[in-house]
Length: 428
Figure: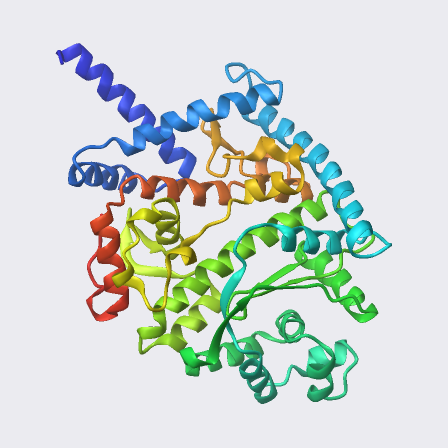
């Protein structure tokens, strides 16, 4: 390679890395230095350049589908086109869900009932490792949610537990009680042991009483969503949508449910792994309040457990039984694509497939093509300046990290988690 060619290559490489950095919203110069170290440690695979090229190629057909020219479109024009796409997709999906509900669930065609039926019919894994109902009931009896009881019209905890599914009791308490009450309950999780959990199907629950409808109306107006996921319980509660819900609310509800399913599956698998740890209860509390992550650092960030799950989900042939069994089997690592599930429910949503980590950069302004970012931006009527890019960036981080994970490295990380006293070192 002569001097001029080397300079051109170096310029192009820096351009691609800078583009990736801006798409990710990464901190510089730490991001660039970390990438350089990762490249050197892995024999210079140019994983960052390949990923950037892949994104540039993958967004082109999306532009064409939207009737746009990628060479003559501003970031705000792309965002406006995506919002129009979400609008038309949301209308078609809403009609399909109401038809499904009227056909299979209720004559009224309740869209939330249609969502529950659609998810239950999906051929995706729905098992979890969840807290036993009896254990949660005991915890709630020790810390009765008195405000929630009053709001739902119950005079005693026994009556509330008798007439409401346990997930609904927890949902009402989490929404209505004070921060100190929530802390007191989560502190009790520290005392839990693996025997307090069981393998069962993830629950999707839709409370329908008049009091729940009244509660939902105020909650949705204040929090702008109606989906509550409890990873430690393996349950998703879908509040009734108010009659005056914003356009796209049903699509947002379905998408958030699919996100919650993956989060519950990932957290469940992590808890199974933690059965051998002395701090199991602390891990339960951490998962109830956030996402599971490992102590190992990667690209300057704690390594998310979802990344390990994605790794084995893609390369299941590398699963080694002796490393995980008896607590974890190969099928536990399955990961469901939100976009695939959506297009399975409503084929016209095919546009969003394979776009979870895609975004487009114009004049340093990123626009996400991730369906979760798009539908939440639309549902909340966010202007271009306030558009969401969070879910796309998280997916893109995962894609980048997967490009540098080696199998020996993954197994070493998992072994360190099984023996937490060893998990002190950091990767680049």
